[in-house]
Image (cartoon, rainbow, N blue to C red; front, side):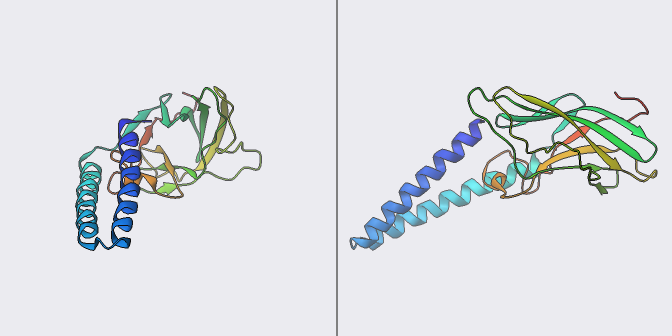
Length: 194
């Protein structure tokens, strides 16, 4: 958990308490005081979201190299190998848990390859693939692979790991959201595993 995660949680709790206070004041006939509190809350929210959007505009896209671990809280993923065989790319992945006491999984994870021209290539479905959302025990890691079919014209191919589902990153400073694109895992496929 980052400092910005804690800041967001603190602001969310403060917002909830402020809304309850404003509702209680309005219910007891102190409407002007309630409106003043709501205006201040609105101004604070405007300033906060201005910061979230500004950071998403100016922060560079994060990049990782082959073998580097990318973590979402205590759940992590790394591209461990990349090989090309004709029009197929086989990417080795390792998912792992840094948690010490709880089992966990990451739902709504999306992986795809992206070429120089921003063409997206999703993994080819394989019936025997281990799910990216597999439940991991504390400290456990699992190795898996994904195969992608890529046309021979594709150049400068990189892996993207992103979240689908509810966009919580839209509310937290520094996440890959709004105008900041999801991170790239850079690799240079060859005919042998890297």
